[in-house]
Image 1 (tube, rainbow, N blue to C red):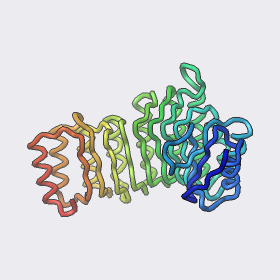
Image 2 (image 1 turned 45 degrees about the horizontal axis):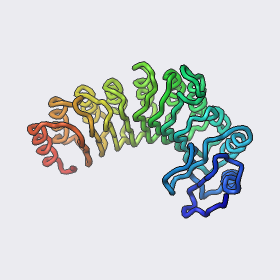
Image 3 (image 1 turned 60 degrees about the vertical axis):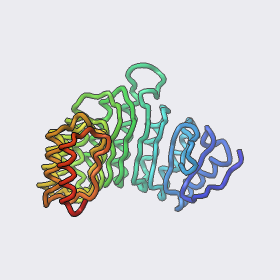
Image 4 (image 1 turned 90 degrees about the vertical axis):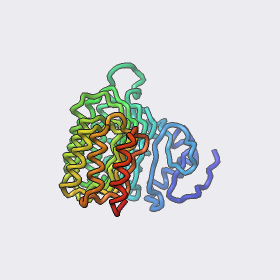
Length: 318
C-alpha cells in the first residue's frame, strides 16, 4: 500500500487491517517510537474511518503487532490523547496493561466499545472485567489523566466498573469528565458511586452526563457544591427530574460552584412545571452567573416558558 502524506502533522493514519505489515504502519510505529513531538493523538479503532481528519490504528491486533504497538506507546513521551473507539478486540485489556509505563497521556476516550462482544461468545465475559481492571491500573499509575470520556460503551458484566471507580477515587487531577449513553448492565449502585468519586476532583471544569437517570443526577448535585472551577454542566438527555434539578440549583446557588454553562436539553417529561419554576427563580437571582442555558427539545408549557423568558431578560449575563 502506498503511503500518503498527511495534511496535518499531528494527525495519524493507518490504512491497513494489520499494524506492522506495510510501509504506512511502520512509519506510524517509528513516529511513536521516535517520540515525534507533532504526534499528540492516537486513535485505535476498528476498520477505516469516513473522516479524513481522524487518527486511527486498526484494531486487528495480535502477536507481534500488539507487542510492538503497546511497547512503543508505553515508552512514548509525546502522545497526549489515546482514543479507543468502536473496537471489540479481546486484546484491549492486555494492550492497556502493556502501555502502563506511559506518563505523557493526559486524555482517554472510550467511544462505542462493545465490550460484551470481545470473546465472540454469549453470556458473561471475563474480558470486560480485565479491561476495566487494566484501565483503572493505567489511570492510577499514569497519574496525569485530566480528561476521561466514556460514551456508548456496552457491557454484560457491569460490576467491572468498580475498578474504574477505585481509580477515580485514588486520583484527583481530572478537569473533564463525560459519561453518556453507556449500557453497563449494572445495578443502580455503581454509577452513582462513580459520580460520587468525582468529589476527589475539585479541579473539574466540565462534566457531561447522558442517560444516567434521576438518582445519578441527584448524586451529581451533592458532588458539584464544592467545585469552584466547574464552568460547564451538560445534562442533556440525562434523565434528570424535578428533584434532581432542584438539588442541582441549590448546590450551584449556595456553594462554591458557579458554572457559566448549563445544558438541560431533551429531558421531558422528567422535568415538569415545578422544575422549570425553580430554574426560573434561579435564573432571576443575583447568585446566577450562567451565560449560556440550553433547554432544547423539552416540552415546556407556555406559562412556564414566559416565566423563564422573564428571568432571562432580568439576568444581565444571559
